[in-house]
Image: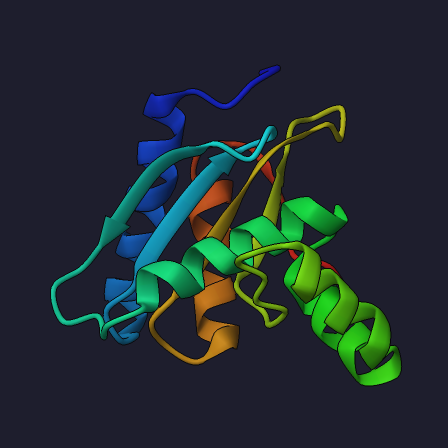
Length: 143
């Protein structure tokens, strides 16, 4: 696969939400962006709190903007707060906590990103990983 299509984006959302249900996580908002930063698909379950959509999009866009999963960006925030603050000022929606995961193909090319918000960040990330794996692509959450 060389680019992320709408059908695949929707399947990623479905897989992430199935994971949420299986694990008993709180309701989630899921945003899927393509590699150029265009929103491909979005879904929010009933019961998500206000602003979860923006949080999900901010995680996905942060991963794309920096080229790494938001788990790594979050760690950078502790070690290099001025750098991460600068990134936040340059990117309108920039959420540097786990739950923003790059989507890669077999060759390692970035096809897009997924951002999820609704539960604790580690659970958001778990759902993103499941959604991406469910369509046979590689998830890159950062280290």
